Length: 490
Ligand SMILES: [Zn+2]
Figure 1 (cartoon, rainbow, N blue to C red):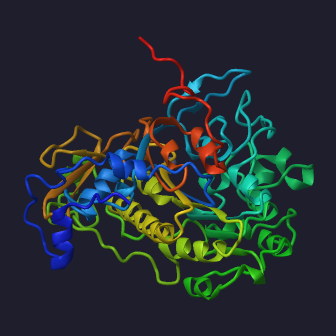
Figure 2 (cartoon, rainbow, N blue to C red):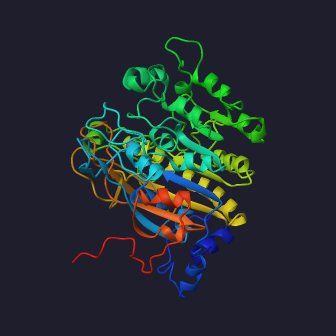
Figure 3 (tube, rainbow, N blue to C red):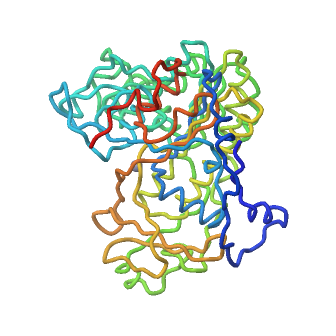
């Protein structure tokens, strides 16, 4: 592990939680060449275990904001400590007649999850299934086998964890093949993707496909999708169906989950909320100048914040496990498998709160995912044959702006006091009207890695490249760094 912690952070750690009044002029000054340390991190063995963290919508802007707010200007997140760091290009496809498709530079979570799950691109709204002329025309599933299906068939234990509905696009990526991400439960599928419903000879809804996929540990929200009847109007729900497929352990609370101790009693399907799970931090809504002018008595703890506002960090009810709790339990259960395991962990509501211009919700979910990464890094330290990759599916709208700057007209903004005691201002500028959802953005996203074959996560890579790394790569015969890349341009 590279020593990236600054002396200031260490000094603070020794002194306890001290309120900072400023930061040192030179904090992370490198005194010695680190080539040997980096070289020591290069390990070409195929990893035994793989853990993939997805911060949904967690672009560099979202990472920097969470770091400054929660750790301070000189602080570091766990993800900042990983030795390899690249950028991932994540454009998707526009519908068309094929065989080639125009790029769509700003995609949603379904085709981006498809990219790392299958190594292939597809169109917006589509999960691990090929492109077609229109969203309501299903594509082909041929060649869209996912890394988690491959790992399962190789005898590895498999796990899928998310703070969203577990049937949402990102956790659906490795676990289902369907033309529209909205087809999460059987009723949804009968309505929106009828030709793919089980009774019409299809693979069924995302929930049913997850039960059929048989991954060992499935944890998240989305109980309402699994409560839908398998047959229209019938009494058998997907939860019942899953029980018949071996999911005999179905924890519904944090306490239930803590009591699960082994996969010998059956596979684990833990659904801890009806929809998406509750965020760690209470919402704090960014508001436009127009809104603030029209509401002079607004409460800065709920709207727009101030230079003295901090986030309320106790929003999640105790009966819902944290992402760290779910990650720790998944690793505990999966790591008993002799052949190793593959686990995907999603911090989903970074994206969802970014859409809503909820600055505290977004920051809290980024910190929560980083905390879950800390759990995985502790495991990795004891089990160095584990590869950990951390990335985002796409970038998002939040931007840090100067704390005195007031963005024009309808752009929402909020101000918070960071752990440094300094104000930070965040603007959201992609909604079409006041209060509407803000949109994804297209900038390449960060990707970090540690462990065997982590050196493949370096430089500018394509999101589909991650698929190969997740499966374990064979040794390269090329000699130069660029041997597998297109030639240099002029
Ligand atoms: Zn989104």
